[in-house]
Length: 155
Length: 147
Image (tube, rainbow over all chains, first blue to last red; front, side, top):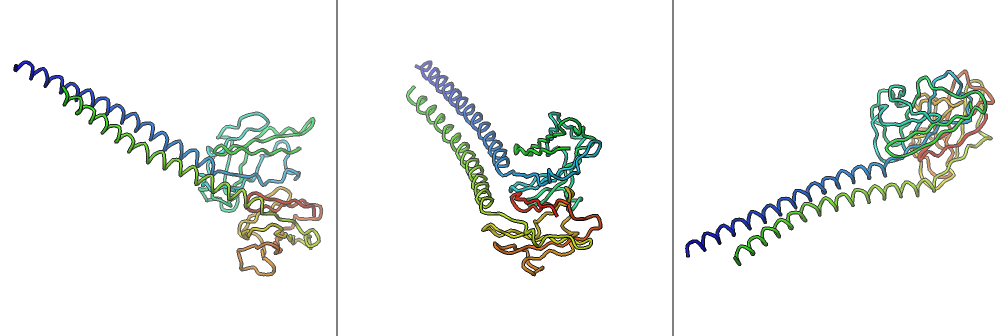
């Protein structure tokens, strides 16, 4: 009779261990998914809030071969962006421009490190290869936090 | 046997409750965060459609070395004086280097209300007739004019 009670006790403990294992695995998994959802929503909301516009004048005759290429970009969204070369991705005439070849500073207050709404930054491509021969058409593609802007000019 | 089934069911259900308790706030917060960002973005898009500016070419000229630019707010939203940008021949002019910037003769206000003209005065000895100027404001709305 005692052996029945012992085996019942063992089965009881085993069932509790299995149930606790299932519950633990479930909560760990759900916690991981929830944390990803939080991170994903932060990224998505920042991308939705980011909006920039290139205010440079493509008709101005300031873009010539051998010069640095400067474009003025205005933050028109509601997302603050750090002023550093890593914040912008630049593709000039189909070539990716490395961060080390990009200089970026606030056009009104060069010591500013945060690009707020309404602020204009000067994005300079150091030693670009501006196509001044042939058609002279050049194209700069700027991406900030998923927001894409295009600037075309004739050199 | 009967009790162990009930006990393990209770533990699994407690785990389910806990999991739901973790998941629900994360899902709701994430949803609200994205919805709010979309609402702000939609508002900005509406304001952009309602905003417009036009350079008054009759009152935009160069006298000596002083450039006078008159821009009308032809939209239906209020714009801000300290967010107006001027480019001369593609070169950005710092906002702090304007000689004067006034809305309808008032240089103390920061509000550029619909229908009012904004006058920017800037002195530089390199400016001459034939230069191209660009005025840009909120939402990236810009106008270009040849002097």
